[in-house]
Amino acid sequence: MLRALVGLRLRLVVAFTLVAVVATVTTGALTFREARTGVLQQSQDTVIEDFRHRVNTLVPNYRFPPDAADLQSFADDVSRGGRSQPWRVLVAYREASATSAPGDSFGELSPAMRESVRSRRATVFQRVSRDGHSSLVVGMPVTFAGRYVTEQRASGLEVYLTVPQQDEQGYVDALVTAIERATVPALVLAVLIALLAARGVLRPVRALRRATRSIAEGHLDTRLAVHGSDELADLSRTFNETAAALEGSVAELRRMEAGARRFAADVSHELRTPLAAMSAVTDVLDEDAADLDEDTATAVRLISTETTKLAALVDDLMEISRFDAGAAALHLDEIDLAESLRRTLASRGWQDTVETGLPEPGELRGRVDPRRLDVIVANLVANALRHGEPPVRLDLGVQDDPHTGRQAVVTVRDSGDGIPESVLPHVFDRFYKSADARARSEGSGLGLAIATENARLHGGTVRAANHPEGGAVFTVVLPLLPDETEDRATLPRPVPHRTTDKNPHTDTDTDTDTDTDTDTDTDTRPESEPDTRSESKTDTRSESKTDPRSESDSKSDSDPAMEART
Image (cartoon, rainbow, N blue to C red; front, side, top):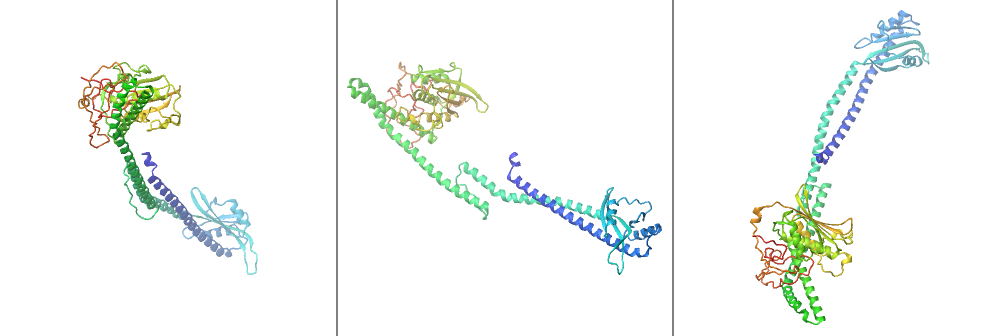
């Protein structure tokens, strides 16, 4: 509603209306003034001319100096000169005076006007309004005139006339009424013209707004119809040219991005098989390293470590490619969140390294993807251990959001120097490393990006900040979806084989399948090369890496991403 009140249409209508009001009022005022002046001037000229002619005609018939009877008779004769009604006349000679109407006080005559008539040799007139009635008062001195007289001398005789102007006032009132009646249609016509003008201006503007919104929604082929050659038509042409250039640029960027993603997926896929073989060889060499000489054993261990890092990088690239292709899916299950976090720490041997603030078992449950929750927490904790300083603390809590309901809040905080302000906006970028971490490190630069994508897949967020007391703090917020028994029943999962392992650092899968590499997320090629990478090597990485196999592959009990269900 407020937007409509301040819209362009209303502003145009108001502007046109104001212009029409000003023009109408100005025109009406000027017309009224000219018409009123014309009516009054015509009436005034007629009365003065008749009055002068009447006095000049009658005054020679009276003797001079006049007595009181002569003054009264002269006043009566002059008053009969009115065309529609008798005039009111006052005749004065020195101290004597007479009026055409007995007892008429002639209140309209002011002392200033009498003085002006006595001192001047010309006719004097004045409009006077008294008791709501307008009258014209005319004063005329009578002078001596003759054939040989070159200078007019005052005779002392003064004649005054008062004429009511009811008829003229009626004409003026009718004129005002006519102007008022003409103003309303003029305003209505101005509003109609304003609406038509606003419609003509707003039609292309609205079309431009719809086209802009369509482009913002991703329809880059949107174009405007161009009509005419005015400024709005030029704007439409410019918009079409901009949209065409934008469409071409976006298409090229998408093509390049798709090629880059495909390249990363292809490279990752092609590296998996040789890396699996190399991992198997390094596992065998690791077992025999104790029997080798010192230099050879060091070289073997270095090869094994680098192979492990390369395999982890390939796994991360495969996981990222799934997110880019939109093929990553959630497998929700209702789990005990605190117990899941404890398993994440225990499976990596961090239970004695990381301080925890977790609820009691069974106190906080929610529907999440256990494997992806494990990846999120493990990557954040590994990042804190690698780049921060101890102690590292892991906390789990719950908060209520008015829009999304209950949310689980996971925080990971270290006690290091924190994250530089210039680095904070980029900590979740892929392959990003700060200037002081450009040296080769164990991380691939994808751990935080993978954690962010997994949180986003849950509908949650990951934030990075510096704690006021020092150190970096990462906060994960995940919505706790309500339990849906039907959904869980429609997503059966294989019961993992349970094994007993005294060493929490080793992931000893007991799968006996041949692991034929059935990924369909980002690679549509038929898989014919089995994954021969051994699953029994010691996990020396501090980050949790995604299993390159299908997410539904069965895992051993030592994998914290799975819970055995009966």
